[in-house]
Amino acid sequence: RARSASARRSWLDQLLETPVPGAATPGSDPDGTDTGNAGDAAFLTWWRSRTPAEMARLDDDSWRARFRLVHRPDRWTPPAEARANLLADRIFAWIEIPEDPVGAPGREAEPLRYTGANLTNQDLRDWFEDSAARVLERQRRDEAGLSARVYQWVRETPVMDVRTLGGTDASTDRSASVNDVLAQWGPVAFVYILWVSILVVTQMLMTSTVEEKSNKLVEVLLSTLSPLELMTGKMLGIGATGLTIVGTWLGTFALATLGLPALLGAPASLDLGALIAPAYLGAFVVYFLLGYFFYAALLCGLGALCNSLKEAQTLIIPIQGLLIVPLMTMIPIARDPSGTLATLLSWVPPFTPFVMMNRAAQPPSAWVYGGTTLLMILSIAAALWAGAKIFRIGILMTGQPPRLREVLRWIAAPVGGPRHSPATAAVPASSAHAREGEQAAP
Image (cartoon, rainbow, N blue to C red; front, side, top):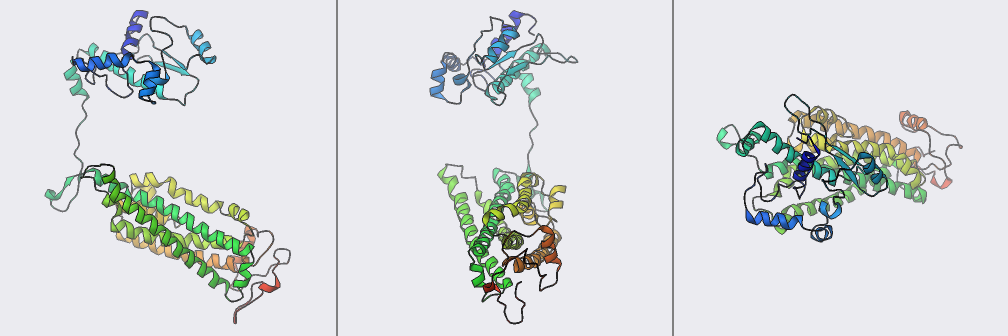
């Protein structure tokens, strides 16, 4: 224990022996026992003699290339002087070693103290903590009277053979491999692609709606089409474009998973084919369509209310807030696909496509798939019903976008729509076209 200044210097000398963060000292076992290897000892001597400039040329990330010991252990620096040097930016940090950093059973050890002005740079602190842990382990082992072999045996962790269920017969079980781990996390990649594709394609639909309205092109289209037909055609056309884009992404992803391991020299046993299993690809297409039509109905209706893209960017914020939730819960659900979070979010329509895709590695029961899909279809029908009512009235409106209360009144009104005052909307005469048997938009 560092009971005196000389003992403290000896303790710091041991601490400074670790040249590389996270690595055992060359020429020694992990517990610090010298192996007597002359080659390793020669390497250590060479390593310790390198200057910071030489280390920088060897490895830009080496701590020796960026930090150097300003005060040697044989010179004690008072805390007041160290603080003044730190405030003057003459040193990066200082480290204080207490009288008793080792401690004893039943007596808490005194903490080591690291003081620095920039706590975001953890390189020096991580190296110091790793090096100090090795010195403490060695001294505690010596005080307990344990040999290096016994100490290493005490520190060994149990070996666990993780196996996957192969069937009713235990002989079909096998040890889990890296491929099984990749298959478990494979749906996460599909969830991210699903999230990006739905976000991009639905925004394409909203942008197209706003541009056609601002350019007065929609008035020409409505001379031959009803608002509902126009909305349906836009959703189907942009959806087909989205499927083409997503198909290209999936094809690129499939080629990458099959070709990258060979290009990078990965072991032949590494098989990324599980990431592009037909079950994953089929589920992706289904949930893309369900998620697209749900959000497309909402954004198409919102786009009909806007006269410019600037207004659309404001109205889309609530929808983007909904889309952030599945992205934030992507990793927790992948860790526990059958947990409470995954189970609850599976039954929330705005999140259902993403969550159910995320649970594909450990599929839930068939009734969960059926129930969530039915709920999603009903939610799409409700979104289309509300979006069509908003689109029918809002697509020919000019001026300021209506307030939320008025939009809700449109949704609650029977088919035919409420009439609004000229102060709220101004409709050009050229747009007052109606198909036979259908009321013209006011």
